[in-house]
Length: 145
Image 1: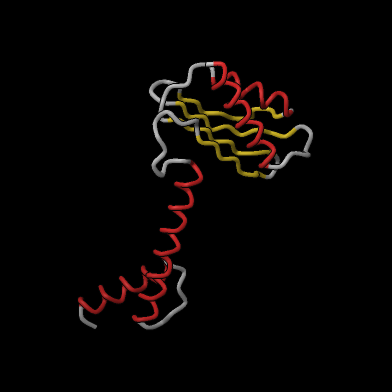
Image 2: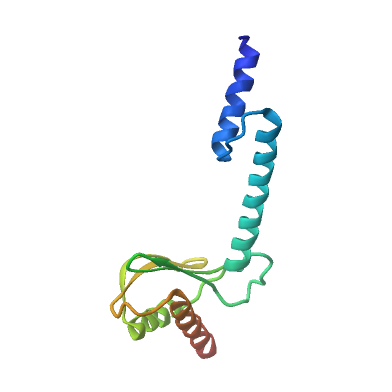
């Protein structure tokens, strides 16, 4: 087999692996790759909408996402601007829910960014309840500032 054919075969094999394709011929691999790229584009669009970066104005409220973990939640809050006092409001909301902050990363310099892992003491909350509590804390903070 020539060097060029080996390179082509290796490229198709990498493409098959990257797209989780089981196809064996070139056309099917490319079709699978094309579908996979479309799925990734949709996922990016959905995530942009979810975190509020798809053309939100600078003066809007911070974006919030909450994901379920095995024993708690991953909470992300992001704003393109500095938000003095917001961290305290969010931590108070965690306390009211009975969430323990197990790990957190916070940036409050040019923008506000919080990534926290909250352990649920009561073992009864779902991600939507936590998200609503954080959104209410943001709303209360916004009204007070």
